[in-house]
Length: 111
Length: 114
Picture (spheres, rainbow over the protein chains, first blue to last red):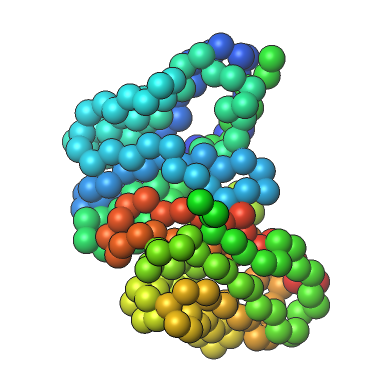
């Protein structure tokens, strides 16, 4: 069993839809939780990070962490075609500086 | 501010040949990472440097992979000899301090071994 599980998709939604992306993990030592966006032929770029359980909002994006269920989510409101990319969740144990990535979910937003 | 620079962007080689990738991190970033990303997978850490020192190379296949970061700035990752299974995207990332959770990635080098 992988430490981080993520549905690879692809996920195809119409413009304006609310998108929900999710990851589960098995290692309770993970304390930092990130979401990266990766466009085709590009490197990943950090979208959001959270440390504690709860929600964090940034514009159209909301990151949610539920440590009791070992489950994290990224919500995208009013999705745009420019959001079409692969979304990678990543996690880190405190004091290790080592990121463990999920497989990524490919999202396509069509006009 | 310039981002992480990697070259070449693409490389096609035959198996058993050597290959090298180069990375120039963001200016002032003392931590440098090399990741490998297989098709349809997330990046996996190969090696992490703090300045010139490799502080985590536990995932680096040392029989054929080597890396160096002379003077604590640029870094080179080498594979010799390459195998078919080495085909992947090799990503370099950097961060400003050892435990900074924000890692900045370069565009990667896409390696195809035939």
